[in-house]
Amino acid sequence: MNREFDYDTHRQEYYNLQAENLERMHIKLLPIIDGRILNYGIIDTRTLLRPILSYYNYIDMLFGVFSSPIISFNISGIIIPETEAFMPFIDSKDAVSSTIYLIDILSGLNRFMVRKKTYFELNSYDIVILMAGRRLYKDLSESHGTVASKNFYKRTICDATENPSVIFSLYSDYLHDYLIWFLISKFMTSARIKHELKHCEGFGDTFIRMTSRRRTYVPWMDHCIASMMSHYFKNHDCSSFNNNEF
Image 1 (tube, rainbow, N blue to C red):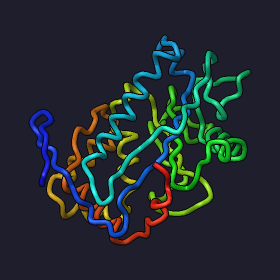
Image 2: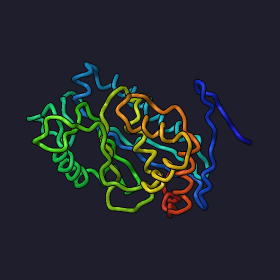
Image 3: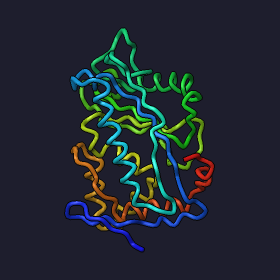
Image 4: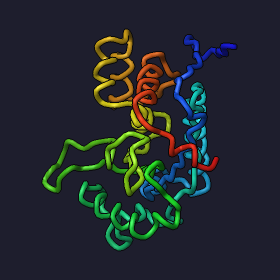
């Protein structure tokens, strides 16, 4: 039976991705929260947790339109400073800069992987998300040209490596496209994205909206995204997810 529900003027369809021998993908998320969010937002830790949890619940529901496999997300923990305005593992408590540089992120990620990867039982199929209150500068010499989001350890969701995926995303109101697109793109290849941009009607506008700096969120999954994800599962071995506990 085909299920549908209305969202604004769009009708959300449900998609069978036709993955063989894979019923469910259970993906763990570990957000690391920048204390600058608490400082700039004049908000206490407990109050901040509500929009964080609501946002990740929204992501889980967004992917809930797929079957074969069912794709679900679960927060395995949240790393957040209790009072200080710093980002754990990235900043020094004694010297917190008003900016974040790429070199700080890379060195901080190395420290995190050494100290906490085993503690949080993270594997290559999990995703660590750096939610920042500051934009990321690529180089110390730059005074502009910051990025609002970045995908570290670039790979797709079923690629087996030593470390989990890492995504940097600027905090807004947790209803923007920066992070959502990175999560969607984990289930497709760059070559297939380029193919669909040429051949799938309407995907060009969707792609621009999701990857631009406009703070508009994606309220639905369209057939172009479903087509790319289905193609991915047909051409990649994702059987390791059969061993993941839900």
